[in-house]
Image (cartoon, rainbow, N blue to C red):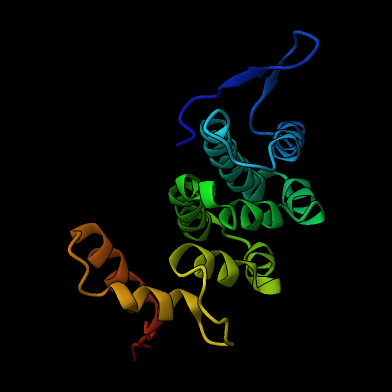
Length: 175
């Protein structure tokens, strides 16, 4: 995913690193200017969320201020706002991919703790899978995923089974 360094062009014609706090601030600005999903901005929102994911993973490994900014600006709230919109469904796939990529690649316990705090992940999962569901204090990732255990699409069934195996994962201590 990070094989070669890419860059983006900033406002003054300067080339800037896309793996930086400055670029995350720019992506935040894009989110704040596109709070309502429309046909004309949905691709921009998908790309913005994808880019934020990439920056967060880079930041987890290289610059803790990146993750601090993400939390300070409560960017998960923007994701929830998008999900609650009728036209936000188009962006849902990217949000699910974002969660998956983050949890697979974030290595610092503090970062994982912050991702899982404030119940944002549960809200996102419940918002994507069943927007009208009553929210309880259960483990939404598992309870919502298990509903699709026999889904006709094989990739959905594989994802459900992977989640189930990870939820019930038991570490074996060898003697």
